[in-house]
Length: 92
Image (cartoon, rainbow, N blue to C red; front, side, top):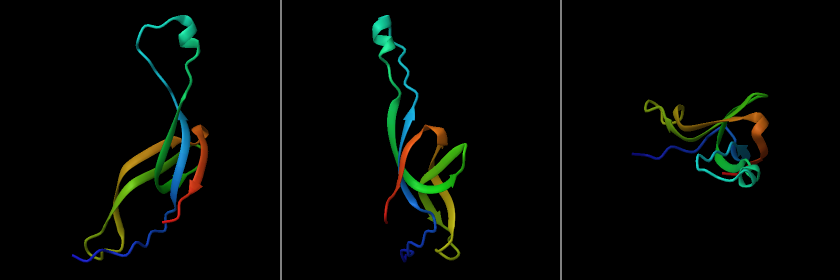
């Protein structure tokens, strides 16, 4: 099987974003008041970015008929755009 050329028109991104943090354990009021959001880092091909959501995928496959057209995407992450702290291009 021939490996297709990597001709992707989607930019590859590294994204730092904040997410909720939850803990179901019993803790003191003082400890609970020190809780902070979690900083996450995600990478992937940028599928969509608008004022509401930023969507990336980590994987894709090619259409078997031509091995050039992207057919399906996988490991899709949808991040609320307002939660993004920083987003940078990664050269592939």
